Structure formats: structure tokens, C-alpha cells
Length: 346
Image (cartoon, rainbow, N blue to C red; front, side):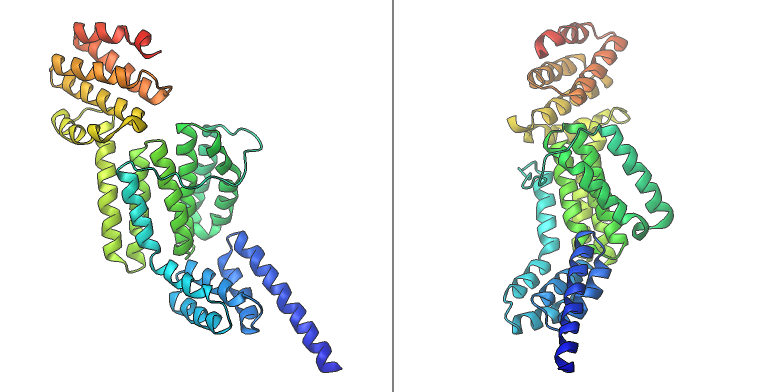
């Protein structure tokens, strides 16, 4: 009788640990989850071995994760084999996703599970992100990763109802979630955050943010002894950084900017009207900077046409800068064309 009671109490304690492990995993406390799942897996409780392996893969502890996968398969959980395959190709899938982002292919393959309870302004999102980033820099990712995840859970639903500014703001939170996960020793957990950051940054057509995310992913790959994957991430990030440089307002090297823009503008189809309008405007501004008023006017006409059906503050800013620069340069034909822009764009 005593043995049966002791066994019952042990089983009850193990089940409590399993539930605590689930709670810790949902909260992003993966090391805590691993400790509890490990006890449950040692007692061969349900799918604890599979759950433990998933957490260990996320922590980057592949050797132990694979051992528990073998144990799970032996206990009748064949899905553990799929977990091994999924983990082995995780970086490759991320890099394929990044490559699709770079060529502008459709990548928005996820949506938050619910609608936002209330509107959150992009500036409010960014302010909180900035504060959390300061904590990360001062105290490290472990100190603030849980807070970053809470912030992300709050703002992610805004993706459904937001605009480019919102997508950028939420993408920055995803980027920080990935970075702090990496710094907390959870590279497997970092990749989904980085992937979503890339998706949102592409939706917002924020080349600089895409470059930043890829640079961080590359540094993570290097840290975990994957130099070839790191090189691929850095190369893709370099392309994004170059695109961002070509689109920026400061016209330090117009000839080089024109060369870069000329190779990318024709890759923007009707589904990327804003990117095309901004690139055409940048071409006009750089031609004007070189004193080529005719070339600037030609691209300005195309830019205004591309922006005709847009509702984008970013695109309007670029056109406004072109208008100001045309007047300052005394480019009368271009300035006259730009003065008619509101009627053409509305």
C-alpha cells in the first residue's frame, strides 16, 4: 500500500513539473522548461521527451536533443524524427526566406492569432522598444528577453490593421526578440523572430531594417559555428544595405546611386508600387544632382505616375524633397512638373 501511495505521489509531482514546463516554455523561459521537461522525460511521462527535445533544439543543445528524439521514437513518438529533420534545415529555411524577401517575392505567410484590443501608435511601440534595447545593451539579453516577448505579444496584433510605419515598428520588436533570444542562449528560438522581422520589414519596404536583421542573424550563425550560413546572411544583408544607401536622402555619390537604382527599379512590379515610386524619385533626384535636368524630369514623370494611386507618407516625402531640390537648382521645367503633382497624385 505504501509503495502504491509513493508511486501516486511521484506521478502527481511529475505531472506538476510537466505543467510548469509548459508554462515556462510559453513564457520563453526555455532553460527552466528544459529542467522540468527533463524530469518528466526521465519518468517517461507522455510526450515529455519530444517536448524536451524541441526546447533543447531551441537552446542550441543539438546533441542532447537528438538523444531525446531517439528515446521518444523508441517510446512510440515517431514525430520526433520529423523534429530532427526540421531542426537540421532551420537555417537553410531562414536563408531561403531571406532570399525571397530580397527579390520581393510574397512572404507574408503568417498573421497574429487575434485582432488588437486597442490601437497602439507606432511611436509608442518604438519608444518601448528603444527602452528595452537600452536594457539589452546594458544588462544583456537574459535580463530583458521575457519583457521583450511581453512587448511583442502586445503589439504584434497591430500588424493586421497597421500601415508601413506600424510594420516597421513591430519588425523592430521582432528583431529585438530574436537578438535577445540569441543572447539568452536560444538560437533556435531566435530564427522565427528574425524571419518575421524580415517579412514585416519587406512589407514596409525598409531596406535598412532588412540589412540590420540579416547582420544580426549572420553574427548568430558565426557564434554557433556556421560560417557558410553566416556568409550568406551577410551577403544578403549587404545587398539590402546597398539598396538602402541608394535610396537615402543624402546624395553623396549620385553617379553610383544611379547605377545601383537602375539595376533595381525594374524589378519592382505593380505589387510593389511604393518601392517603384521611391526608386524612380531617387533616380530623378540623383540625375538632378548631376545637373541632368532632362533626365531628372523623365524619371520624375514616371515617379509621379507610379505614386498616383498610393497613400504613402514616405513616397510623398521623397517627391516633396525632389520638388524642393528642383526649385533650389532653378530647374524650371522639373519644378513646373512637380507643382502639378498634387492633382496628378490624388
